[in-house]
Amino acid sequence: MSAVTPDPPLDPRDFRALFRRQAAAVAVVTAAAELPVGFTVTSLTSVSLHPPLVSFCIARVSSSWARMKRARYVAVHLLSDEQEDVARHFATPGIDRFADTRRWRTGPYGVPLLHDVLAWLVCRIVDRTPAGDHEIVLVEPFAGDYLDDGEPLLRHMGKYTAVARTAEVPAPRAGDGRDSFADLSKNGTRLDTKEFRH
Ligand SMILES: Cc1cc2nc3c(=O)[nH]c(=O)nc-3n(C[C@H](O)[C@H](O)[C@H](O)COP(=O)(O)O)c2cc1C
Image 1: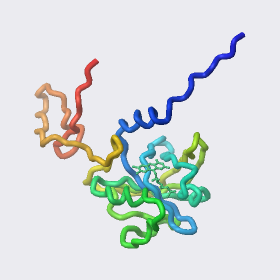
Image 2: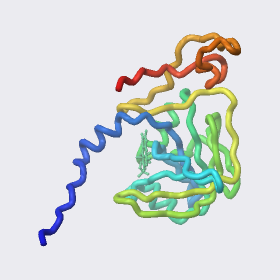
Image 3: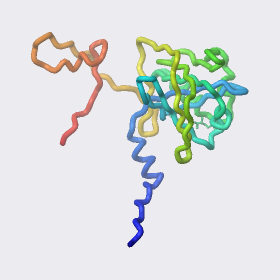
């Protein structure tokens, strides 16, 4: 009987090149430790509705993980497309990311809450699972708020970007036989999509 050799994993450079093509919302996770901790992530995922669960991944080698691995609560902030400076700030090593006290306030259980974000959630940490060189952190939100207006900050191809929108399109009249494409988004705007050919 011959041993089955498993397929070798993808080269990390190829893996990275592939995932640069995935557009991802940019978020900042904060926690209360001895000193406040906060870091930029694109690994945020909505996992479950009943109960509400969200996950993010954090590199085990990061100083943020060393400082927050015993935290019981975190805040998760979705950044707006006007907050590229915030995303850069919370990914800059070696600085005090909370030095400017005008940019945040203290929320429930001492978690730092950033101002002017698109949406924020305060969450209880329910699980931490090692996954390769990262830790998957599963959290249950119990408080939060969001802005009615505003667009998300995205990361794509190693750059910060925003959702491209076409000019206003008139909403279709009832029963005119067209797809109510414009009904899917608010304010009569629609996502600028490319057609896929099969
Ligand atoms: C756009 C962007 C997305 C990031 N996403 C993640 C992530 O999902 N998980 C992670 O561990 N680090 C991520 N990072 C890196 C951390 O924000 C940053 O390197 C880290 O906070 C710095 O390491 P430190 O905690 O040792 O200071 C991301 C950085 C950027 C700029």
